[in-house]
Each structure stands twice: as structure tokens, then as C-alpha cells.
Image (cartoon, rainbow over all chains, first blue to last red; front, side):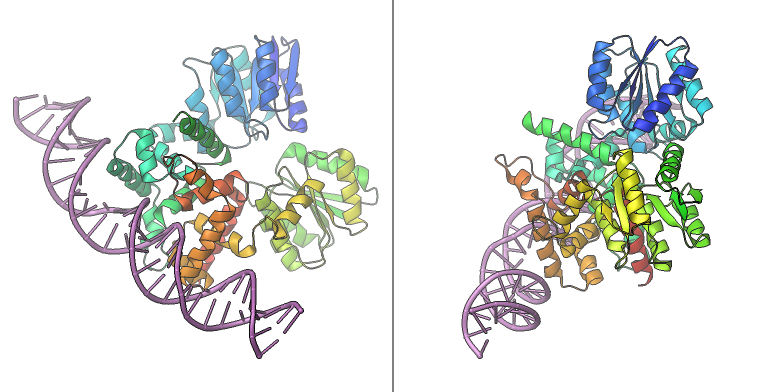
Length: 240
Length: 240
DNA sequence: GAACAAGCTGCGGGTTTACGCAAGACGGCG
DNA sequence: CGCCGTCTTGCGTAAACCCGCAGCTTGTTC
């Protein structure tokens, strides 16, 4: 069995290396990559490898890397190992998981025990292992209760990119008014009004900009999500 | 000599611990804190301690912690040890450094050697040590060449918070028109127009929202900066 | 098939933004 | 002092945004 470790931080990388050795005696080769680009390359060379992947790397982040890897070989098993459980990450990951693929999402704050268990479950037993905390988010966010619909999330990203209503309408093939409807929905769910009106009519907010702020503060958006959305936008712009 | 380590990540914490022991044989006590809040408390108890501080911690980030520590004891020597050199961090730090205080800013990607050197320089020799890369940013951003004026940065933060022009005017004691002038200046410097007009008049951007996006992508803003700005805003709102 | 919920769309109008134009205000500098 | 650049402010306008109202298309349920 081969395991590929894709991780920025040298300390974390060697920690992972040890953990893999301890948890998987049947593993004979461990390969390390220090960023997403190298990770993709090594994954291509060592086809049979299972992967432990950090999200949030400077050069090319884990979600991007995982996407291209899964595109080439959807049955690859990937364990995401991340510092954060931002909804933006969770959403980003579950958007790219191929049907039926075995994967995992474990926080760096988890105990050694948990990490080793996850390694065995995924790489040996082909089971999905999602940290409790992450799992909670996933259900709340993807289930519509209290969470955001895909269409709401979509328009959130669009205004976060700085598109005008008209541009969004074109991009999503909607009428202007529909776009604005969705925006209202979004403002509603984000509680943009609460702070805006409140009691004092002083502290007035620009709804659109405020929605973005709140989304960031609630970790619905983060740098990595923005970055991905931006490159998608550029592709769309180029493709006409 | 006492050294206080304030750092989220257990791996990094123990690495730092070792580095301090190796670099500073005259140091007899090393104390560890796993977040900003505890860090502040321990700094208060061990008044004479020098501090190594991570930025970006979940509970209370390094800049906040450093600010209260420096407020109580401005001569404290603090070495910031961070993964990133975002302009938002650099700005955040240099805004709170007391006059004449010795401090340092070293990236986690620096070599052992660099870290140890920095430890000695700051804690023994009271010299400021700023990583080359960070230094570059600092000069470019604080010097007006190509960088952003304080007033420009201020208004950037204000729109990122989601305030309306009118609200900004009140907050900064300006006329509406002046606020809008500064916005235009900002849009100019951020190159918001470029993409907006370009050749195709299709891809139109909402200037205000787009400015925020670009600022994030360029790391002029990040989560921590937003968070700080938001609490400041709330204080201002409460204070009327 | 009737009833109902959910989403898309057009119309109309009140508010906010973006910005050109131009008249002061302030501070250096020869 | 007079000249000049930078900053502030007011006025006015075109565009964009926010949103209530109302008519349509769906899909679901009984």
C-alpha cells in the first residue's frame, strides 16, 4: 500500500508521516508533497496511492488538487486533514466528491487516536469518516433547515465576486427581477436587516456589502472559496 | 529570563519550546499558552516575560492579545511568528506597536537558524527583526508609493464592513461627497475599473463589492482584519 | 382536476451610488 | 505674498439597487 501526504507545513508533514507508519503497518511507501501542484503530479505517478490532503496550502489549495485528482481517478481515497471546519470548506469538499468515493474529513485538533482510526477506516475499509463537528455543519448546511440552498449560496458567491445584478442575471440565465428576489431571500437568511434597522435608524448598512461581510464572519465564505469562485468567473468570462 | 509562548498548534508549540531552549540558554522558564486569552492572563502574571506570539488563533487572535498586553506593559518584547505575510496582518501589527518597543515578525517558513537568531536579537539585544518579505510589504504599503494611504485603507475597511456612504460620513466626520471621493480614489488604486470596462462591456462589476473582493484576493483584508474592524464598529455603534 | 406552494418575470417608484463640474480651504515654497 | 497641489464640499444626473404588487408557470398533493 502506498500513501501520499500533501501538506504545507513541515512539522505537520512529519507528524502525519509518523501517524501513517503507526496506523498502517501494511503501508510500504510514504510519499510527501509540500503543495497542491506537486501533490497532483505525484498522485498521477503513483496511481495506486491513497492520499492525505491538507486544505489551505499557499501554492495550490487542497480542494483544487483533490478535484483534478478525482477527475482523473475517481476511486482515489482521500483523507482531508484541516485546521478548520468553515462551512466554505465543507461545502467546497462535498461539491467535488465523486459518487460513491470513500473520503474523510478530520480536523487537525483531533486526537492521535482519531486520526489513526480514520486512516484505517478509509484506506483499509473504504469507509467515509467525517469528524463529528464537520458532520454537523454538513447536515445543517446541505439540509435546507436553517441552512442555505444551493441557489442562495450561488448568488452569495456572485455578489461576493462583485458582479452586478445584470451580470448575475446573464451568468445564471435569469431575469433581473429573479436575481433580486434571490438577493432578498439571501438578505433575509443572513439577518442583514436586523442590524440595519434595529432601533436606531442611524447605523445603516449597504445590504449587499453587509451580506458579504456577514458571510465572511460566519465562515460561509473564506479566502479559498473566493479564489476558486474567481477563477471560475474568469473562465466564464473568457468562454464569453 | 522567562519566555511565554502563545500558540494554537501543539506541534508548533513544542517546536518553539525547543527552539527557545536551544537559542536562549539563559532562559530558565518557558511558559505555554494555547490561545490569546490565556496568553494575556499569563503575560499579566509573569510580568517580566518575553513573548513569542502566533497570529491567527481561533480563540483570540495574536493581534488582539498583543494589543492588550502592550497596553498594560508597553516595553514587553514580542516576536510574532506567523504563517502569512498578508498586508492585513502587517498593517494590523504595525498599528499597535508602541513607540520604541522591540518586536519581531518572522514567518513560520523561515529556517531554524533565522528563528533562533531572531529570538536572540529581540530578547537579548532588544533589536527589531522583521523578515525580509514582511519588511518589503511594510515599506511598500506604509510608504505612499503604490501603496494605500491610511485614509484609503480606512474607507476600504468601512465598505468591507457594509456601511453606507452616509454612515461612513457620520463615522469619519466627513461630508457625503468626501466619502465618495475617497471611494473613487480607492477604486482607482485597486484597479476596479480595468476589469469592469475592459473591452467587453459585458462583464460589469458592482464597484463597491468588487473592491472588497479584490482587497481580499490581494490580502489587503483577511478574516482577522474584518473581525477586528467589526468589533470596533460595534463599539462605535454602542457609544452612539 | 382543484388547490396550493414555490419560483420566475414585468412594472413602477423610492433610495443609494458613482462621478463630472466647480467653488472654497489648507499648507508648503520660491 | 502669490502660486500650486491636495483635500473638502455642494449640486446635479444617470445608473444601479431594493422591493411591493401582481400575473404566470411549474410541480405536488389530495
